[in-house]
Each structure stands twice: as C-alpha cells, then as structure tokens.
Length: 488
Image 1 (spheres, one colour):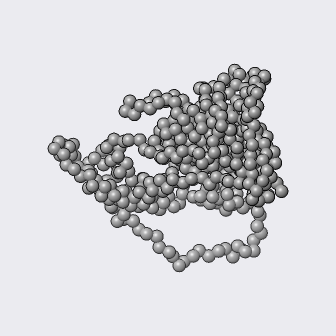
Image 2 (spheres, rainbow, N blue to C red):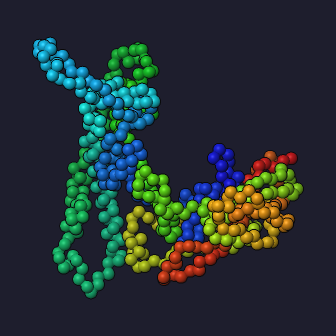
C-alpha cells in the first residue's frame, strides 16, 4: 500500500532483492518477474519542448545542444518567459520636420517578460524585436573555439580506442568463409565505408590528436582593482550561485548581465527488462499525450495488499491484523498465503539467442564483462526479511473475482461465514489474520512482518512459435508489512 504523503506500509520484494511499494514496480509478462527501477534499461524515444510541445529529432536536438530555439527561461527565477507586445512610436527627426512623422505608422514590437519576478529583456539592454517567433540575439562564448578543440580531441581519442578494441574482438571471429564478401568483390576499403556512412576517418582523428595543443599554466595573473575590497556591495545586484551555474559559459556576477537561457528539452523514454530485453513501458509519440502504448506496471498484474487496521504489537503476544486483497487483472485469481521460507527458489534464465545476437553482444563495447558480472551478483542477492514478527497464514485457497469497473458502485458487500474472510466486494477480499511477535523483540523497534503470496496468473501475451508456454502460471510474491513500533 502506497501513500503520497505517508510512508509505505507494505513493500514488495523485487527479483533483485530491493524493497519497493507496488506503485514503483514493473511486471515483465515474458519473464513473469517483478522488476524495479534497477532491473530495467532506459531508452530515449523522442525529444520535445515541454512549453511549445514541438517534437525534435535526435540529430537536431544534438545540434541545438538539447535546447528549444523558440522558448526561453527567466535567468532570475527560472520560470518560462512570455512574449509581450508593445507599440513603438516613430521617432521625430528635428531636421526633417513634421511631414515625415505623419507618414510613419506606429510599429508593434515584442520583448520577453517573466510573470513571476517581473524580469524583462529590457532590463539587460536587449532590443525589442519586430517578430514574436524569435530572432533574439544570442551571446557568443569567448572560449567556444577552445571548447570545440577539446571536444574534437576527446572524440578522436574515444574513436581510436573504440576502433582498437573492435579490431581485437574481430580477430577472435576472423573465420574466412568460402563466399566472397563485399570488400573483395567491390574493393571497398574500411576508409571508404566510413566516409559513406558519414563517420570520421582514422586520418582525421589522428590529425586531431597530433595537432592538439595542451593548456599551460601561466604565472601572470590579472590584478584586482584597487577599490575591490573597499567598494560598497549591493547584494541585490549580485547574482546567486544558482543563477551563475545556470549560465555556466559566462557565469555573470552582476544581475545586469543576466540573459535569457534557451529552455532545455524534455525526453520521452521507454523502459526495457534487462533479462529478456522486452519493453515494459513505451509512451506515445505525441508530446501532448500522457498515454502509453505499453504499460506493464505491477499495479495492474500483481495482487495488491492493503492494511485495514491492526492492533498494537507487543513482545510475546498475538495481535489481530486486517488485510484487504485486490485482484487487478481481468481474470479470476487463486491466492494462497505462505511463509517466505516456503517460496520455491526460481533461477533466472536467459532466453536462447541466435548466433548473430551472441556475436553482436560480444562485439558490443558498451557492456563490459565487469558490468555483466555485477548484474549477475545483483540477481543472486536476497532481501533481508524481518523475523521478529510472523503472520499466521491459514491453510486455505482464496478466490478473487476478476476486476469489474461497474461493480465499484455496489455498496453492499457480501459477508462470509468463514473465520478468515470478513467480506467480499467485486474483486476485493478482506482477511482477518493473526501476528505473533517474538518475546525477544526490542520495545521501541520497528515491527515488521514478512508474508508471501502464491497466486495464479493468466498471461495474455501470445507465446512464441519456438518456445510454446502455457498461459496459466503459478507465481509468487513476497512482501513486508510495517506495523508501527513494538510497544512495551
């Protein structure tokens, strides 16, 4: 059970051992495992501006340094600036007289204004523009040439190291077949292939490394003004550290030199399971939509457990606990309560991959052997479950009906005569359980109890032709219940 302003009283155990509320977990329908934020990979689908909702390709976003060209942020309070219009009266020329003034019409001009702190582009001397869509002057970085030289140098080093590592990996699989390849048939060399693909050649990278001039420290330091320590300081005219870091290229000291900054782009990202590489979430391409094409959240596939009420936990005593189970799926579910030690061990296994995928994974330079070993260690990690409090689970199989949105308006729950089940309502079920606390529990400590769920799950994903699998599965979920503190 998760709250917005209160602590999470029920946390589920992820397959990697992390304890998370059900609202922060995912469910992979291919692995049939619960995944958390550490078990997934993130991919950027699209770039867009959150203010004007303009989509932008990745290449264009990289060229514009992930900034929107038509939206700006206030340099003082960092809110979005708005474009205001004003009427500019024609200036009178004393030498021409009044004849030319009558022929000139008032002209509409535009400037940037912040509705939060009342900062305007006129405060720093930016002239008004005749067009509202843009044309604002951009400041040039005095160190742009040096920064570009450093970027080219490090890009050349990275490309050289990547090419060397790729050559070493290719030598391991250098098995020459009996068929003629494209290089032998057309005489296409590696340099020509890189030029066709638009990549930088090895000669340009080597020249960038050879022509690089390293920076050298200078003993000559510009002296401070004579009145630097004696002049009066006006804190209203001095920028804060946050304002300076917002404009890292210039870092203005005076508030009169603050210029509007282009708004940073936002991204829409999809998430994949690390084990099977299938999508868990995938948003729609439209930046104005908040819907998802794929949304495999654990809240929609795993039975949800909520606390109705509980008695104060005391050492060596047995207290009552009322829980509510909810079936979020559109199929009937069989649930059985177990102890965490009764859950069978299920090993993580990878799907069989073809030779091409195995070779591609071996040539992938982003995933090193160290990362693979660390991920394997994460999969073998187990959560530390509490042992001071134990829930006495009944030996009974509980049936939860499928989710029915129309039944939410039914106010008459069905009462059962069982000692365990208090009432039923649509896909919800209330249970009456007992919690036994150990006599050695320290008063004032946290009272936590571990509980395991065995539930039936019907997978609606069509199985692959190569690996047919049954649609009905028996899955397990372990959760930790927080029952406050142990009383004296």
